[in-house]
Length: 122
Image 1 (cartoon, rainbow, N blue to C red):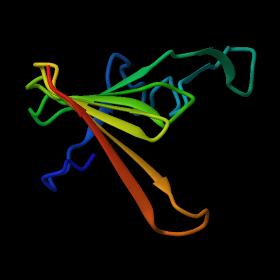
Image 2: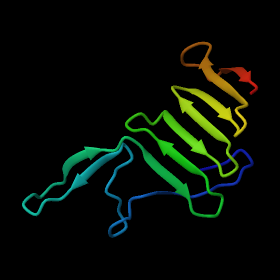
Image 3: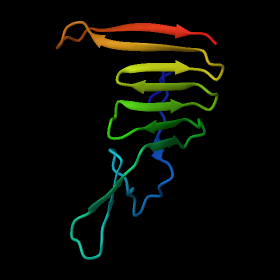
Image 4: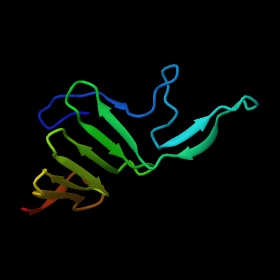
């Protein structure tokens, strides 16, 4: 993940130990198992969310709500939080101050996004 300051941080799936270098959940939250009598994996469950954590001491956590990759929350160690739901990003701090940014296109098929900002102070 790349932070606004330009630094990059690796994220690993938390709470699910890899087996032979592989996790039991795919990026959409599906869990597969390999029964001894089957030659192909069998879908068993879907996770309600996946937690990804940094491993470099920044203590950031990204929670993704599958199967919608456009619904996620990024939490920082200092209490800041970024929520993204359907293209609306809301940034808040531990004191309840927040602002949200909505990005949309003026005309379909153009590379001219427009951002609108709302804010609130606790």
